[in-house]
Image (cartoon, rainbow, N blue to C red):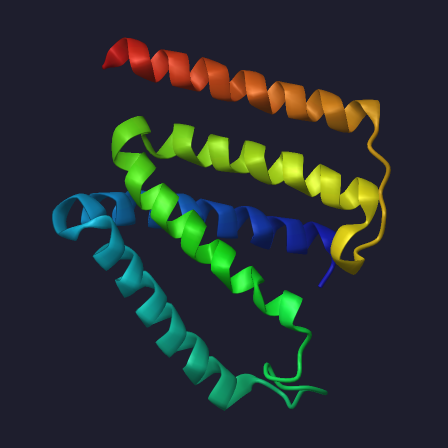
Length: 150
């Protein structure tokens, strides 16, 4: 897959996450944050299990053989889901999404800069810092405009 097509797919995945956040936020208001999150993870586990059975080629190691620190990544999905289901009804989908992206960008830049978790190191540059500042300003403007309407 070429780089441009990959980026288009990643942007589409981000769009799907915003749709998921909006829908789960409403569901969380109706049935509760934990039940909404449970449904998301149960359906996701079922679909992923089916994909593994029918499409996953054999791997060099199993989940039980993987380094234990790598398994902790699954916990972060729970945190994200609970926070988004609770936040979207209060601040809106766009503000919650931009806030998440700001956090992702900040942590991503740290991971890149220091090469954490075995990733290649990519130096923190002035243009990356400017991108972070622009996104922080976008969050501020979006939040302030939504507060004025409320």
